Amino acid sequence: MARLVMKFGGTSVADIDRIRNVARKVKREVDQGHEVAVVVSAMAGETNRLVDYCRTISPLHDAREYDAVVASGEQVTVGLLAIALQEIGVPARSWLGWQVPIHTNDVHGSARIERIETKEIEKRFRDGMVAVVAGFQGVGPGGRVTTLGRGGSDTSAVALAAALKADRCDIYTDVDGVYTADPRIVTGARKLDRITYEEMLELASLGAKVLQTRSVEMAMNHGVRVQVLSSFADTPGTLVVDEDEIVEQQVVSGVTYARDEAKITLESVADRPGVAAMVFGSLADANINVDMIVQNVSHDDKATDITFTIGKADMERALKVLEGRQEAIGYRRLGADGNVAKVSVVGVGMRSHAGVARTMFRALAEKNINIQVISTSEIKVSVLIAADYTELAVRALHSAFNLDVQ
Ligand code: ADP
Ligand code: ASP
Ligand code: MG
Image (cartoon, rainbow, N blue to C red; front, side, top):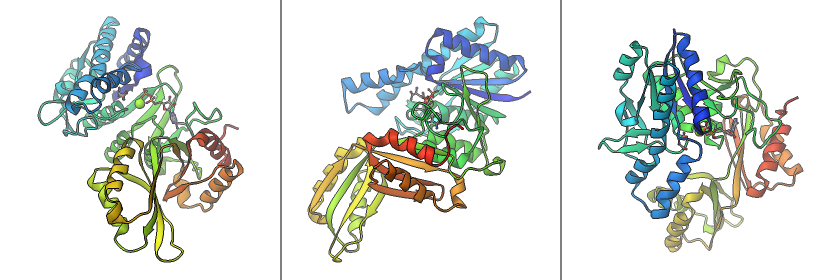
């Protein structure tokens, strides 16, 4: 007998037929004698609809009320799935975040899970009951409903698996595993049987939304065995594993992209100590996260340009902050471009192989794609390019690193 957490995303519970399909999948595990907790998302499109309601009434809405609204999508699906399970003879009950409870901090809209009390759920496991738990939500220190950020049901599932010491956390979705690139963009993308936690973490944080970044972080820290697989097919999925469990290692395991960043350039900034600290200090004071940074070497030791990227949502605010400090920083011109994309190649094999950047830049040059900013880490290389070339770049890199299905 094993203890399993099964998570189903929005498309997997998009209508009544699909909820029945989920119930049958859960029943199959229960019939094998396993203890099962199921985590579900809201029906596909529902969370977007709820977010829009809040924004329409007030662009600067109260984040606590936003959470009260957007968490409601999952309340519907937990109840419906519990009914569907009961209907086919599987004892089940639904749990909202506050009922479990799933304790979080009070950062409404992107709260972090701090502790999950599993006593009640485990008590019902012993009576043969399935727990159907609402993803994406928890309860803050003041007793208010919180949500974990978009895509947060993955994190609910992994956190619950860690708290329940589950044998595995199966993430059921609308693709049958983690691919070498988003299969909706690259038709030749290959499904990976295994991927390391580290690579998955990079892919997720660089844009592959198949798993929420925090869920991978949590799986890595707690040693949760995660499998990504399809709700609609019965094929094995992708296992997220430690590096020593990978048999055949590619240099590059995946290519990914993100269109949610904007580029800011400060032209002709004084080339002296303290200027960068002032620029990035001002942004940090305004709680604006900076991602990629380049500063050119100055030709005359007097002035240089600084370019960096931030989240697109922060662009207007960042411009205001920097305009307000023009005199103190001493730049000549401030420019911004929201029409950019970050394309990245990821692979733990890069640690021991040279030439990844060369292959990457050459492949982009062959397609005449100009690189605006570059950043690297031990296991990834990212470039910023014009957004119009995103798909072309992803496909070209996928081929250049021999990732296409043979
Ligand atoms: P769910 O609603 O089940 O949580 P998501 O839409 O959040 O599903 O995530 C699944 C989607 O992630 C897929 O439909 C796919 O388009 C996208 N995706 C992006 N990159 C990858 C990748 N490398 N492998 C698999 N899917 C990916
Ligand atoms: N329903 C939430 C969202 O759309 C959480 C999730 O699907 O993981 O972001
Ligand atoms: Mg998701």
